[in-house]
Image (cartoon, rainbow, N blue to C red; front, side):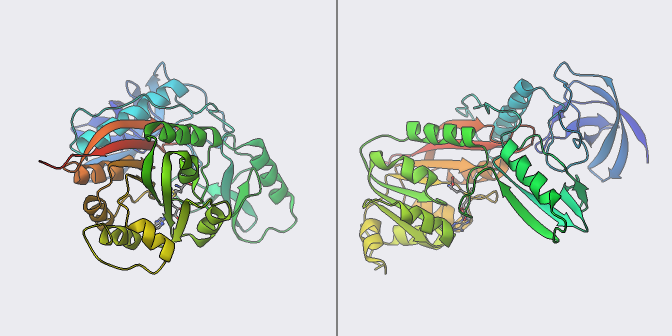
Length: 372
Ligand SMILES: C[S@@+](CC[C@H](N)C(=O)[O-])C[C@H]1O[C@@H](n2cnc3c(N)ncnc32)[C@H](O)[C@@H]1O
């Protein structure tokens, strides 16, 4: 293995610093742009190399002391060595760059990133793994477990649950989801304060006095329920039956929740669009489906929207589209595909997961008016 001295030029998506040695890009975790470092190359590829940090020779003014003793070994956090202000700047830039590079978008209406009020002790749930008496998280770039006594980015209640699990005399091998509060086993946002900020942002972005909202990938209706005042009707779609069950429990007359695949359900909405004829099974849903949605919210998993979902959106099309993403590259790909039909009005990154490389983004779009 060879050693290289590098100037770190940028932070790549995922959090590794990038420098160049003999013209080749070298990725070095736990570095910051502007730093001079020496690193040991551990993986050599044709186009790039990966290296481990050996020494920071000239350190960035943004470098701070990590708060977690496992930082650098644990696969969870990426940025504990970076000041919080600078983490926000890195994430904002990465969203813009992904939209420019992958999305081929110009003049992106970027808004400032929404920070997390808590930079540590924010996670309201974690999943730990147990194997052969070791209880913790996977090591970075590995499938072996790191024994974890306490996770500083998790809330105190979560750490208490971890201590209780660890105190048991025999913990069976497997996965354990530890939560700050007992709640249904459905998807819920992980950082309460930033989730509330995201919900308030969406409420702000959606105009009042509209006819129909479709909340696709709705979970238990986190966005739909916050927007009830603005719509005559609301349809939520998610394939998680437990989440749909939870959404139905508190549903008012104007809400309908469908347990199904967004791909087929959205196509059906398009199919009974005023100009087409297809009957749907569910009587109430079919009545709602005959109304063209005025706003569509999509909050897909990291893989983003499938080609069929993108096509269903274009076929509808809703007057307003709000896309919430936990993966800027797939957001960028999807916005590229939708750019002929929709105008991007704003892009707002949110820091749902401080200290980690994860980025949440809310993009607000409006349908291009039909040519007259
Ligand atoms: C990022 S979560 C969003 C949940 C919700 N919007 C919230 O804020 O609580 C993604 C959701 O999409 C659902 N999901 C993923 N793929 C789906 C698909 N093809 N059809 C329907 N639901 C899907 C998952 O069950 C999950 O609830």
